[in-house]
Image (cartoon, rainbow, N blue to C red; front, side):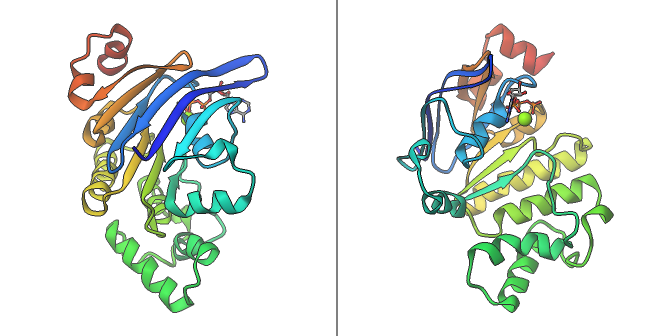
Length: 241
Ligand SMILES: Nc1ncnc2c1ncn2[C@@H]1O[C@H](COP(=O)(O)OP(=O)(O)OP(=O)(O)O)[C@@H](O)[C@H]1O
Ligand SMILES: [Mg+2]
């Protein structure tokens, strides 16, 4: 396993969001997390990259409990190994595409401007958007913005990529393109992924395993086939309406 949540608890004031979440993510696999709006999916992801801290429990990243981290250096090692595609593409509006995608390289690598330019071009071509370095985010469609967000998330060649609602708000065809990119990252680069999504079609296209978060805990977890065939009533209602 590469990532493990152990008995994770989180409340905001009176509101208990996570109430003992246990989940294992295996190296090289794509783990989907589903669950209704407000169930705490984004909170789970935020804890993995240090945007939120748990009240109780452990979040293990390659054997290390990130909840115990005390220095930015410890976090930096996790950030270098993890790409994050935020809910909404979250591009920097004042930067063009090339600057957006090159940003992590400027922050975290010693590459020259020329090397950065080459790497940005390579990643853009990989997501089939070559040559759009000079465009501003506002000039791009929602689907293109998501793909640029994905390019930025993978520019440092992370072992882990975390996706928060990668297809929400996109038409089915564009969604399938994103799902295919997630699949290719796993197949061609052995990336370990966590994909949070409401989109059942996307989940079925990308998942090795699916977990459903409900009332603060993992209600069901299993392989794609196990989940498709599960008799759990809440899960069936979620998947098949
Ligand atoms: N920083 C925060 N401060 C206070 N409450 C928060 C914070 N972050 C999340 N919450 C609350 O925690 C709950 C879970 O939020 P979260 O964003 O994880 O839901 P989600 O499952 O990702 O939902 P969606 O599918 O709509 O994105 C919500 O009630 C939300 O209001
Ligand atoms: Mg969310």
